Image 1 (cartoon, rainbow, N blue to C red):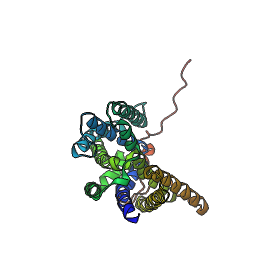
Image 2: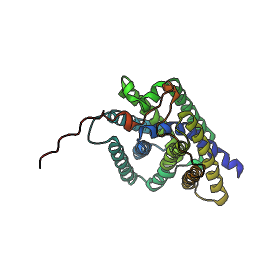
Image 3: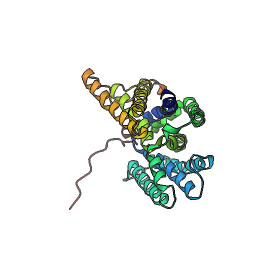
Image 4: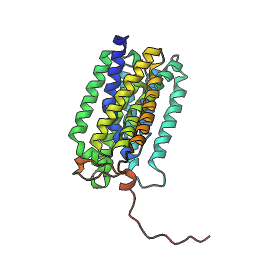
Length: 301
């Protein structure tokens, strides 16, 4: 049993390694469901590939997923800084809903439709092989190196976009790398696991600290606990690995919240990022809120 457990655990930890970091950016940008939208857009790409006769999990299927996430990166990067009565979260939600409906619709035209829909949600983590793990690790290493080399710029775009020139270009590069990560992980882990690994570790981390670097360490630790416990429990009780792993992330969050209450931890409300010169990073709602102006005169009836 231990031999069977090792590949899924390693694959999940590889996914966590980059998702926990990107999750901190997502929380800082306050676009919590952008990963769900990206995951569903990538799933739409693989569904279109399946519809034209390309088997899921192949290189050609992955190229379809990457092409669709490229479109998503363009949409999300060009709507973030747009001054409009329509918030970006609405655009993200619409993208998710439309992509989800399209996946269901198109999957109905294929013989493997029902199985494909289930795998889209829960993934095939239990069947992952070392070749797929190595491919993911290689891609994530390249993305991680890109973000580390350009960390000052990416952090500034997330926490202080008003200080960055060509912000839409850098936003596009961020979302493009984000989409590449999602395209590779959603085929293995599924939409639900991808969302859990991206958001829940970051939420746990920010319950205890507002320092970005320390939050990343806490996110990795919390995610590792959830992954090992979830996959171990799924093998021990013979439960479905994907759904139980998502529940394990949720249980870890509940335990962390109780520990926070017991320890009376109260981190500040602004995320501190030393890469920005030791100052405080500000949340998206703070950085993009226009300066206070005099109250408008009452409108006539």
